[in-house]
Length: 293
Length: 320
Image (cartoon, each protein chain N blue to C red):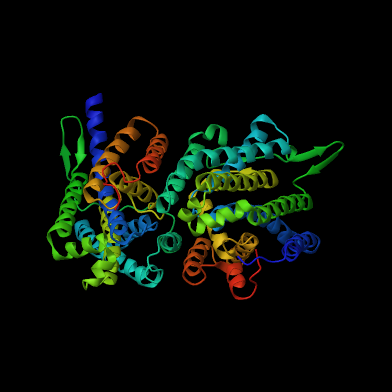
């Protein structure tokens, strides 16, 4: 294969990574933006979504599309439920104290990971894609499912954006993000908004995981990379900025896809992590973020 | 902090050291080995406590200082054939230098950003170990041969693979570091650190250079953690990338929280407690991380001050 098609393939793979990453990072960003909570267990909610997707799709017989559709609906709902319980039992009792919640979500990370290992096992298991149509390009065939992941992610991102900017729910969320106490004084049930945002944030990660699982298999340690990459995306995009998050996800996903196709993936990760750490040190508001209030 | 008679404080610490000394002759073999490990790792926790407990800086990347000591000592022995004392010094120096560099960068941030930045630098360090697997052994690690783990002073030689020698070396390091932290905490420098934790702006206004003090604390903390890592490599003869992973940044936090942040003996209590809880629990289940997770959440919910912190608050106000 020549350089051009090779690059195109790398870019397509990068685009799929970007799509999933944008959804996962958006969840992390929402939780941080509204609640000021750094959810270290975010990657584990992602993993939980993937593992549940495998469980649901294998439990349902018949055409793989039926099992997948069921997983796409049920898995995020279950993950949201788990997150809701965690929020009520732990985060709220800590009064969303930034340091306390980091320690607590580290605890959740270990609990979810260990439970997945105990009940799901150390194997990586695949989920059959709902359809296996291949798009034939002049140089190579490309999975139609992968492109549909990109489309699905784009649709979800637009919906989230519309909800945040055009609806009453979005207004309430933004008000809470802007000033928690004033929002409370205006009769906004801040408590319930926090619970909802935490659940929705993890559900976005779970949806991303269900979408990726036919491509990359479910494994109990699969939450580590998305967590780190989401952190990178959220930081580069500016903490709590939706547009920045999406732009950064595309940037990181594409460059990750292209760099790791031509260089060692470990080296790519080292460079990316170091660059992000430096961004945080020298430009804490992120590349696209505005100066903090 | 209520000031107590120094005699009482020093008596307590010397008493703890003496108790650990006696335990060497009393404990059965298995527990003697476990205690040596616990004391070496308690040094790691003490280094962490210096920064987290006294300065209030929560780092999520201390595994890099521990493993800087681990590899600084391990690789010089393995590749350059250095003796044990030189390798130990090399390990501590690596940790101190790394801490200086990281401190200069990371201290530009604060709060949540500080945690994430330290975590990312530690991740880079971890990935570098994997990347240079040709020298570091990658995730397989390296085993340091018994022959290179002998200290020879004059005619006499100390074999670190001997369980009593190992125990005594771990105890010696532990005692020295314990007394150093006690001295730091009771010094002017220690008081400035606590003042920074309580109110950094006011401390700055009173004319203290808070950045320089924080940097000194990061370097001291990094050097102590590296000493723990170097001792661990030399005493137990294994270096591996798992010691640089995120988990080893979380563990000292857990030990310190459990024992009591900003107490001199808390790190030992926390490490001891956690080691025995997981040791006993592993008899019933292999799910040891589950216990770590549950412990972290319960601690932060119900005992944010830890064991010794709670004791100090309720009964013994003079505890340092």
